[in-house]
Length: 287
Image (cartoon, rainbow, N blue to C red; front, side):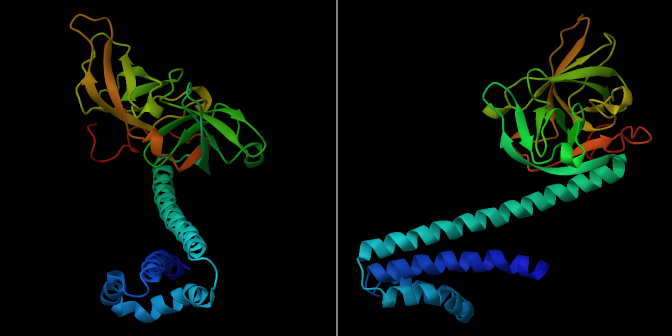
C-alpha cells in the first residue's frame, strides 16, 4: 500500500511531462527541440514513460479530426493530471497533520475525534466547517485542536458536520496560563486571520506580572473541560504592548496554529484525567 502511494505521484508527474512533450511534438510535426530534450532527460525511465503515455500517443496517431480540438482535449487531460498531483500532495500534508495530532493527543491524554476541514467561514467571522457531527458524538462547546495547538471551539453541530469558531475570531476568548510563571490571563482573537494576520491579544490579570517575548502559554481550562480543556498549546508572546504603570499586562501573541492552513483537526470529546500542564508544549519554546 505504502509503496503504491509513493509511486503514484511519480507516475502522475511523468504523465504530465509526457503529455506536454507530445503536445510540443504534435504542434511541430516531430521536429520540436522538446522531443530530443525529452529523450535525454527521460532516457533512464523511457520504458515506464512509454507505457504510461502510449494511450495518448495512440490517440494522436489515430485521430483525423481538427488539430486545435485535439490539442484542447490534451490540455484538459494535462490540467486534470496536474490537479491529481496537487491532491496527492494535499493528502500527504493531511497525513503529516494527523501524525502530529496523534502525538499531541498521546502527550495530553485527550480523547479526540479526528476530522477534516471542508469549508471556511465568511468575511465577518473566522470559522471553518468540519466533516463530523452528531453522528460522530460531537457536541457544542467542545475544544478543537490540531498537532500544533488550539484551533477553536465547536459552536454549531449538524448530523454530519460542525462549525468551529477559530481562536482568532474577534468574538473568541480563551483563558490561558503562562508556562513557567503560571500567571493567568486570557487571549482574544483579532478577527484578521482571513486577511493573513492570525495574531492574538493577551491580557494578564495581575498588574505585577512581567511578560517577555518568546514566553509560551497554554489553555487554562474550563470547568468540566468545556469549552476549553486544559494544557493545549496556544502561542508565544511576540510583542509586549503594556505601558509602565498599567493595571494589566498586555501583549501580541503569535499562535502555534496556522489558521489559514488547517487540514486535519481533532475535537476533544473528553478531557484528560489529569491536567497535562506544560507537557504538551513544543520543546523549543520558553517555559
